[in-house]
Image (cartoon, rainbow, N blue to C red; front, side, top):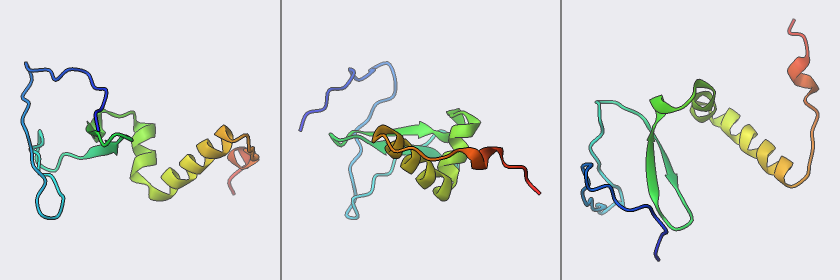
Length: 94
C-alpha cells in the first residue's frame, strides 16, 4: 500500500518508530502531558495534531464524545440530503 504523501522534511527531526507487541507506537511528544488528535486516513497514514493548535470550538467537539457523535451524524445527514430542524438552538433557556 503506497500513500500519496508530501516528501519527508529532512530538515525536521524524522525517525522510524516501530509498533510493539500490542501494535502501539511510542513517540516523543513536545511537552509532558501534551494532548494530540490522532487521525488515520484510508491508506493508513497516521497524523498527530496538537490539540492546543485547534480552534476552541473544534477542541470542544473533540473533547465531548456526545457532541462529537452528534456533529458527525449531522454532517452525514446533511451530505445525504437529510435535514433536521435547528429551532432548538434558538429556544429560550428557562
